[in-house]
Image (cartoon, rainbow, N blue to C red; front, top):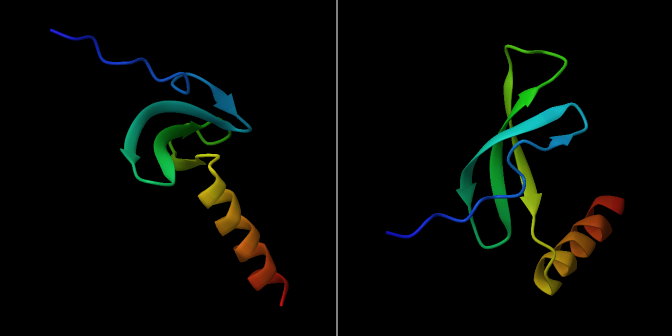
Length: 68
């Protein structure tokens, strides 16, 4: 039996949000369920984009499009 890898994001606080669990993963990002520290009864999804050349190019392209 193998032990699943521990995700270093679980338990971290980013801004007003504390990461609870990983809820999804795709080619460009990982999505986490988080508690909103300012609103204890509210849960949110936090997306962490992977830093790859492709995602950075995509982000730069979005910035150019949004500036028009």
